Image (cartoon, rainbow, N blue to C red; front, side, top):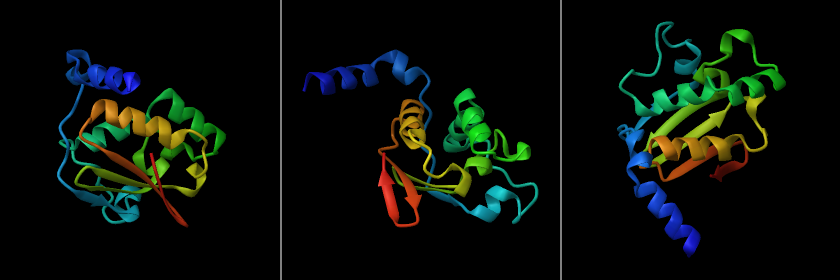
Length: 137
């Protein structure tokens, strides 16, 4: 109970909310949209908080290490489509389907969920879509 109270106090602090972004309306970015097949000029809207936060994450040093160890192509470095096949937001639930190269990376989705919740506190459920169902983080 004390840990939950400390977490709630930290989340309510001005420092925690200073970097918080508003939650987007529901959307779905398909594999063809993320890869550029649907439209070569498509990218997440600049007004999309989820797009901003995912871009920050995939451009982090941690993501670069994942890309290096998983041998992701150089043109996919720092790109949302380099790590995810699809991204879907339904209310406060964010569903992400990792690319095959990024499947089964230990701690990837836990780290991503923590980062997303720090930047967009309204996201309540981060879901990893896998072949056999889904994992909640």
